[in-house]
Length: 451
Image 1: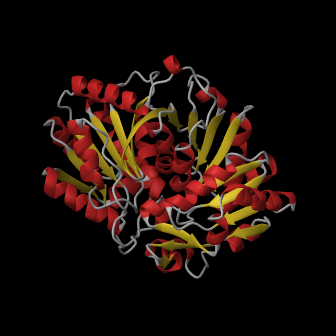
Image 2: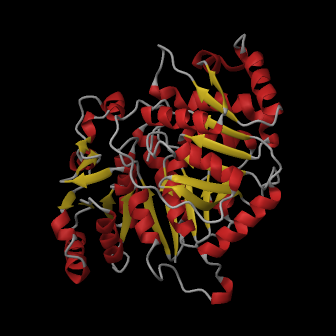
Image 3: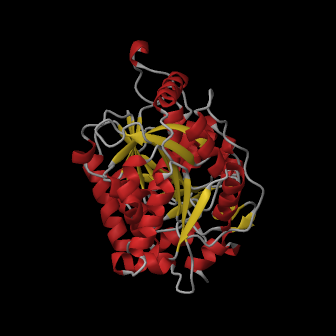
């Protein structure tokens, strides 16, 4: 057995797949959801980014279904990664998969990042999702009700509350089997703790009914933690997670060449702002904020060349650099991909000189890797919940020792960027333990917030 994760943005693909890498499975995140692009990767887990967050619902559904059709093989299970705050075209994408893959087990809760589900409604640090700035920015006046959102795309739904979930064992499997037998297309599962998600993972992985999972990184990591998830492999053919991490750390220590670390931040969320402030204060890092007007016009802008020179001069000193997208009165969340692509174009001439890259926001990470010609990365370790470290796959000749950290924009502790920077510089002797959930904070208005 193997696992295919289909995600709508790159940082989401990584934070969903990292639990499998941490459990010792070879895990690859790919920018292209095609069999040709992935034939060379003998991976247990493939996380394919369809890059559908900003598309129309119809096009997102088409591309998602095509990804599953291209990558499905006997014994491969499907996990549809969705944003824990329900951003993007997730409902249309689930509907596109359901006719192929069976009952959708819908559980977007991610308790480690403060996202829970109660009565089919998302709570962020205990407060309704509708009250957050992120939701208001793109869904003003719309209810964050999973049943209603799935009904809009033609799927019938049922609800499994926490008390029923916590029965566990055969009773829970019987409940889910009955829902599947009834012809219901999506089962929405409440969850308030990681233990709730583990119970769901244990039950559904043992069932014979045709089903697939729909969730964030929360449910994925609980599935990854289960014993004997994939086909048994001979001991001599299996490298444990701790052994892989030790090998990686030794390689990184040998390959340290004092090349600069570049931190790209495309998110404008309040969370990212606090993370940048801690990074500046503790790492003493230089910061440049590129005006969005320069990025909108690209090479046509009178200041484009000057900004490219300025970035080159900063990296030329071999010092680390924090590079951010600014904000102005013309701000529009829909222009995130455009601004990210332009930011990547500014950096592209200097990419080969980097020793490490930290990218906040899925669109930012995708744009930078695309510009550098990196089509896929193998995940190595998790710094904290949702902050994944990877390396270019062996087929990439450009700085194969480069380490790449991805993080969604609007979640993570205030310490997240600094912890990522420290990891790249110090290659700690032991993996950094996942941090406890951050204290409740006002949601941001990010360009690329996802989880």
